[in-house]
Image (cartoon, rainbow, N blue to C red; front, side):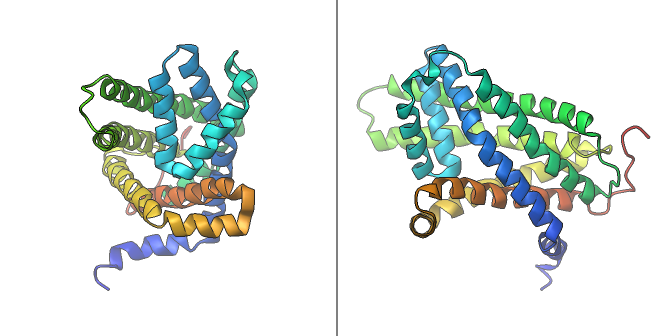
Length: 275
């Protein structure tokens, strides 16, 4: 019980109805922005003729949501071969709109953690969200580029390397590149998104810990994946992949919000922006 005492406020926080509303709202917007974001990335990779980067995109999607979703996405791309001959402004607009929707409930949730009563106006929220979208998108692109460079290096390496060794090398390198990027993105969200001045010293260790927990969460999901997929296929039929994205995103958002709750403990009364 003494060991669980520091985690008790987080457990109580998770039991609040509002937190579940925030989590599912974030997850729904992740589902809406998932495929437009993927299309923009694939179009960019194909427009510059970099196949290794496209394979890194698939690998990243599979690492987060599982190989079943990656396979489904690959098949979906094959169904629309003419989709990438020209840039889709519709996908970009949908991406910006739905990605902004992720940060709206997240700002309200983080404000609640820090005790902020007044939220940003809709316009200011959109501006801040837009900045975070470009910042996090740039970090994601950097991670994919590093993964692509490693993939390209291994593909051109000595042919004596067996495929399993190449696969594990790709996984290790991708983790080494993705983990700092994830932690930096979490830091930006914790530091910038709340409508108050947050000391960066308080959120840096939380961003690191939450990044590690999210990585452990991915391995836990992969461990229960066979049983999980079998149940979802029975219950949801052809929509199971969408359910996977929503459920994984919801659980991940709860971890992110728990990190915000942990960081805000013992904080001084908030000073809202504009005061």
